[in-house]
Length: 517
Image (cartoon, rainbow, N blue to C red):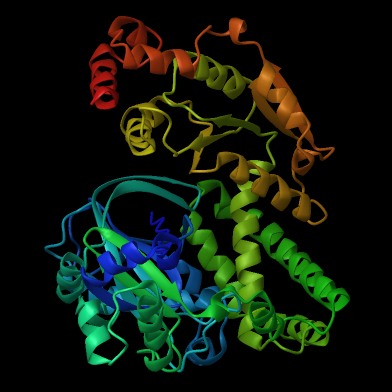
């Protein structure tokens, strides 16, 4: 899963000496596309030339985008998607391109490879107004990727490659676009060629990039968003000033909103109300017990996109919001229904939530998981993927996927994030917004006695349906992540292995050596 945070060039280059060194270095400069970052994952299933869905997963911000999401779209609506959609239905074109272009050229692509795609979609939260949309640009990839999938969510961690030469080779093989090259060479030469007063200084560096931003047109038509600069193994960006102009972004977003806050509120209340009706129909479907997510998303898609029964509702929605078109209404309804459907599967059964930093996961954590899994129908673990001291998030993610998830109780589900508390708060907030429309259970958050005090004082968790339960470490196993890291650092292998979760001795050895490297 891509998490590419590119540094601003002028937050790094601040002095005359730094500017001189930068002007004297070899750089490659590419257009920065103002789009959404998608992940396309080639799994480890044998290549199937006839069915790309056997080999590929598409995800956006950890949410899997299925082919079945678009089963309700007919030819007329696809035309509307192309010209008017600002929402999820635009990912139809990602699947179409994947099926027709990428998959036929991917037979030699190594399994367990992720492709990082910049997708030029129409979206209110993006600044640029392009003339062309729905093109895909490859900006990087990862190989030998470990993944975890649960309830429509996709989690992965791999070693990413963003070196232009390598990425361009991959793009050419798969017939995907690569962001256009604007310049390569030493910028000092550009200073001479443009007859700036010949000084290798910060002013000339700023002048050069100002010229790039004001003289280059986007490959998509219109003004470029910015540029990405590759220097050795470093990546920087310089973007148009309007990218940080909150007023301009707000004005663009307001183009698609209702005339006032009261109408906007009524609009979304109606969307949620209709969404609830659809979900209740779906969960009463005879096949619901099979729990096949794609089957039910297909049914939801048909009800949201290809249903004349919604025409009366759309007429009502137009009264609240005159700035959206039919396909926008249906997009809002479908995405709201999809997310609510996936969430309610686990939020109606008295779920337990448990946040784990887990660097490393130890026997104390495991005893808590076992305990709460016996007391609740569903348990959701919020697991940190960030680094801690001498333990990397990627190594622990690999350990979870290879050794720990396979031995978890079946009613335990894993949510991976570099900010697990943020994910927990998001689910609580989402649930609070849905409780008027769907039956959702009471939630119990578990933590040790010290952490539970902090959680109780968090205003973002202060809802009547959220309960807290502290666990005394001595009631399970008296061990901490700090002590486990000390064992690792001090080479106290026997104690470290003693307090690992209940995997076999061979796996404990593998965990030791993976974290010890």
